[in-house]
Image (cartoon, rainbow, N blue to C red):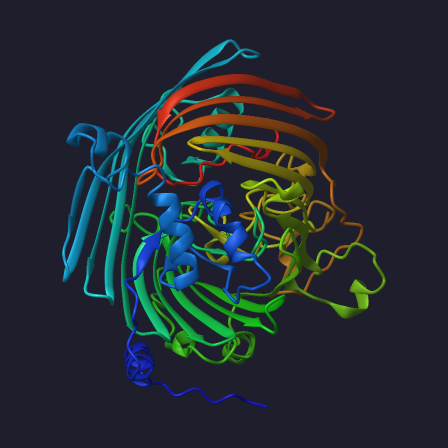
Amino acid sequence: MKILIPNIRNTLFYTVFFFSTSFSISSNAQVQYQPYSYQFYQKLSDTVYSTKSNFHSSIKPYLVDAATLSIKYNSLMNYGVDTVGSHSWVHRKLFDEHLIDIKNTEYTFYADYLPDLVIGRDFTNSRTTWINTRGYQLGATIGKKFSFYSSGYENQAVFADYLDTYINQTGIVTGQAYDRKFGGSRTKDWSYVTALVSYTPNKYLNIAAGHDKNFIGDGYRSMLLSDYSSPYSFLKLTGNLGNVSYMVMWSYMQDPRSPKLSYEVGNRKKWGVFHYLDWNVTKRLSLGFFDSVIWADADDNGNKRGFDFTYGNPIIFLRPLEADNGSPDNALIGFNGKYKISDQVTAYGQFALDEFEASNFFSNNGSSRNKYGWQVGLRGADIFNIKRLNYLIEYNGAKPYTYSQEKSINNYAQQNEPLAHPWGANFNEVVGLLNYSYKRFDFSGELNYGRYGLDTDGLNWGKDVSQSYLKPARYDGPSEQFGTRGSATTVGNYIGQGLTTNMYYAEGKVAYLINPKYNLRIEFGGLYRKETNAAFSDKTTMLTIGLRSSFRNLYQDISSYKSH
């Protein structure tokens, strides 16, 4: 049955207007934006994953306005603050307060200087590593409905050998921005900026526009939408009605891999739209439903398509629209779920479906047309009744060619990096995390084992999401026989194909928190990473110490991009 979609170019305007005026009950709490970081968010676990809580935990970053979350959040942000105020101005600014902090009944404003100064030693490769970052964060609220947040960083660094290889191959400093040295120097140079404007007209709706990252899920990784790739611009509407939370987001992203149409235009651009519905069936059980579509801003000949207002509809799910368009757009659907077994144990999982062919799926013959990823995990707070001892155990996997498309311009990636799991596809991973806080000391540890297949000799074995899945390594015929979308299928594609690689990763950190307002800390870390296959064996043993700040996730537990 054909689905009729109104051709109205003001769809987004009417959408925002309808949601913001449909309900008359005002928000009663001031909205506080908290940038997403696993290390900080896990400190909220005892509240977020309590069996008494009805909080929608899978949509991140959080806007801290719910009363139950605010109590926990404020206790973390104000830990150790002397309510009597007997300390000097210098002591308060160093340990307890923002550098600039203005509060009154109508508005608030704060600003901080964010240093990230680290020195380390990669003993295996005899390399001294360092990071020199100067950054800022600032935030403001006007009344109880409007808030603003921005952070920015100017960076130079020398990384461990394996990170250096990744950056030289992708051109991107992991999850942050492009390297201004373009791989021509051991020293990397880049900038990183985020900004978010948030408006909450009533307790049922939040409207946010920004340049930042988003995350959907309850685990350390996400197979649907993660915070790994560099920031992108977006407009996001989040509606809350009791047990149901619904998010729709339109985004504008880049693809440096595609051939440039002209020097003046720069990197090729692409659009994305994401829907996610989270339903708290009970206070223990939650079910989430996800879909997305990615499409090119212009084709290879420069014909401009721009924003497709077919996808402006925020209510209907996207796959029927994408099919109705008869387009080459990249559609992905998925599921997220969690069940709180107890206050100390929560089971969660995800499933992402990129493409499906029933006849080959049920025969288990390794069809390249069956592209999907999965996640199962357990997480908990206050394990063994030890306050602030939190854990997570997780298993992730994705079949070869998942998230890839005919061309990189509409694959599931932003600026050469995956929008979901950092490893792309063609992998299995087991990861365990342990976190403990005692007063101002934070202890964290990670163990990770992965098995994946690297691409070699120009062949596409399904790991790199920027390669065309219509040219799999097992196909030895002329590429023109592939014809139109989905006309070719190869079998015998299983996880680990290509250059089968095993990765072992262990990392531990001890930090002393100086100022919780912007996560200023002295941090000592140790890292061990070993990556082995038939072609090479790469090992990193490293120690670091530094003065660090900000709430960014800076992932180091990444796989190789392709064979060295």
